[in-house]
Amino acid sequence: MKQLATKFREQGFLSPVRVLSPDQARTLRADLEAYECDHSLRGNKRFKLHLLTRWAAQLVRHPRILEVVQAILGPDILVWSSDVNIKGPSSDSFFSWHQDATYAGLAPSEDVLTCWLALSPSNERSGCLRFYPESHHQGQLTHTERPAATNLLAFGQTVDLEQLRTSRGLCTSEPVSAELDPGECSFHHFYNVHGSGPNTSTERRVGFAIRYMAAHVRRRIGSQESATLVRGEDRFLHFLHEEAPSADLDEKALEAHAKAMALEDANYFDSASTTSEGAADAGFDGGAGAGAGSDADADADAGSDPEFEEKMRRNPGLFSDTPAPSRLFCYNWADGFEAPFVPATPETVESVCTRVGVSSEDYVLDLGCGDGRFLLHAAEVHGAAGLGVDLDQDLVEGATVAAATRGVRELVQFQTADIFEVSLDGASVIIVFLLPSCLQKIAQRLLPYLQADPKNVVVSINWELPECRGFQVAAYPSDERGTQSIYIYSTSRMPAKSSSK
Image: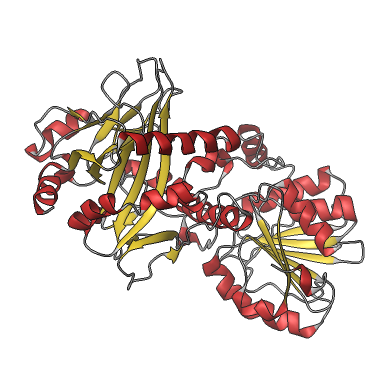
């Protein structure tokens, strides 16, 4: 193992390393393709499968893999993420030359690596991984974003090969193809420059990638994420701990996966907006954008603002009811934002209203309202009045325009303000869709609110409020897919406690 670790540190990768027998690889591929057939591998469903299925949870803990990882990273090991890499037969799809560290926002990147396990033959014809030996010694390189329909990287991030070959004279080698048989894997440094070409064969190229890190690795900037402890102990607690699923794709597993992906996405997408010039990462908010900052009133009608109209023209789907990753806002945390804008699904919005029984008798306060979808729906469908508060002036302006367009301007208002300072007086229902770090702060205000009137209700999307646990009456998935969760807190208004999970 020492020899393997030495070789890894010298050249930046190891390949091939036998982990599974051919029969075990075939079984694992069958498990993966059964999952793919039933649940698709689109969007976030191809990431962190070790939180959704028992076979993937066992794979990231495979003793043979962990022996190699421990020799390189040490005895205390976390899994940051996992994902499926598939190229169809006769496909033009490729991965451009890049470093895994570029948008990850993890530090130190020297203590993070990727294990890539082949579940089908991975060779030059099928588009196997190719590594530049010793390229990891150059540290973080500049990447240029060149999105292309056939580039499988989200932003088409690409290293300038001329820079790679000339920078400090450290990398003069040609790339090496890491051909693997099913059950073999490669390991590569987070700074190693690598890519892969099209699959010109008549078979699918199927691989499973696992990102391992030493327990002392942390996020450079942004909100806390979650990770899975697979060996040793975690004395640093830079990451929330994830649990292995007790059953494949059960309600608890779906909920845990949705939470983990929301945290990871919140940092990843903003990292992409800053790292192309070698920077680290930041974060973005969803469903709510809150923080300590401006309290200027933006309640005026923004419909006549040419700049805002131009933004709407450039982003026609900005205030639609269908959330999409491309519409996630990237925020600068230095401006006071404490949560990224991750839109609530239409099912979540309606489920909140029906579960709580929102009516024309209610005044709903949405702390971190984002584009205002909760209040707009509550007013338009259920006749409720309310106030939405957010630090993002663009979202507040858009929500104000939407209220006028949908004929509920007399019922709901939106303000650019700090959720930690706005008054809670008069609200019968408070909605929060915030990250745990922000919820912990706002809970200091919500607990007295719940104690003040037994009819008061707090609804938290995706995360529980531990400080208010004594008031929790019910917890529900928002839909059959379990994409988002709803936690309801009150003393008298909600269903009986027997409905709780």
